[in-house]
Length: 446
Image (cartoon, rainbow, N blue to C red; front, side):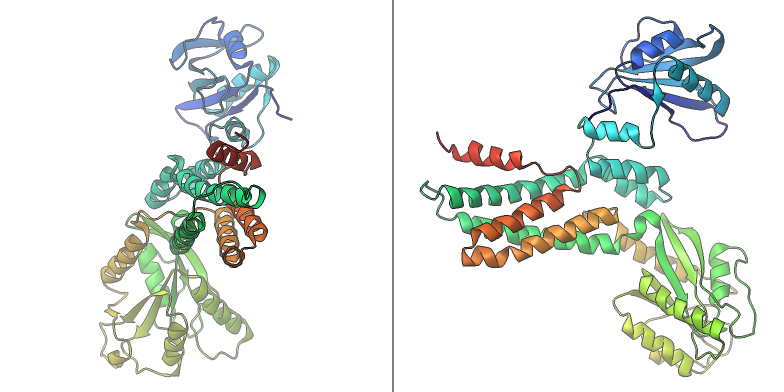
């Protein structure tokens, strides 16, 4: 049952600032604001400078009051915002006065929940709102802004429309076989299915390539001991994060730090040197290094220019071959020393010294990240969205055989499942939508 109480909460982050915002939403929002401000009228969407008073008639603050009349507000209800002076004390006093006059404290996410229930936003936009608040990079903000604008909603709606078309015609074919149907209807359905499969597959591929846009792309630095991995990490971070030593096995665990390159946030993982280790602790670190490679978006493989390629280097090359689907940057480090490494083993590589200039490597990382992010491809922003699309694609692919064999009930089952899964991204599927298409388009029963 829908809760129609009036809710209140501080809408700005904790701490000291020039402005704090207290938000009210619900049927009594305007009445409560009028009592606190002692003003009888507020013009919608116009900021009004008002003195705010306690229930004991003591002055609290002078603030801007904005009134958003339902349904033209974020929640779809009457909303009032108090823009008061910053700081925790004043905002809390305004909240307490609203509570005394009949409001209750909002639960976490309740303003967005009411916006969803009142059809002001869908689930994809609600997720985008949550993530854009926590966004740490320009790439993430741009991607999430596209979802806030409704790009994913339009994407889902287009697929829903095609699936509803398939389901409606299938139900008519099952239940009203005597009615005239277009002769090419099943060719139309197959054509739509093929296009949806391509669209969903491309979206999943793009999303997997770009999943680091929100939390940060993961870059793993690998190589044998003493090749300069920790020195490279420190150079990228511009401070000494990792201990540097000539002793092999100094780094025994993965070290993870974040840094900005261009417009991108990346998580750099400095791994333990990969070699045949007898030390149990070091061996665990090496196993974590191999795991970091599988999880990374980009792998930086370091080789020592001053040493002949040995079995440990060959182990690194073997790992690279096993992960050839990754974006791999091969780097020959210690270019300031006499060259002993056989460069013909690497094909393409960057040569540098971590003691001097690493800009060629930084530019290469930025180029790779730019190619993964600067695209108009649809991108899913959460595991929930990815699972919904995967399940949708699975049911559509499973529906092909029943359609070809004329088992329309099984075909309709899979299409219904696909509809429910794709709809979970924005708003749960309502069977009445299919009925509207059926009876609206076919005029059954006249």
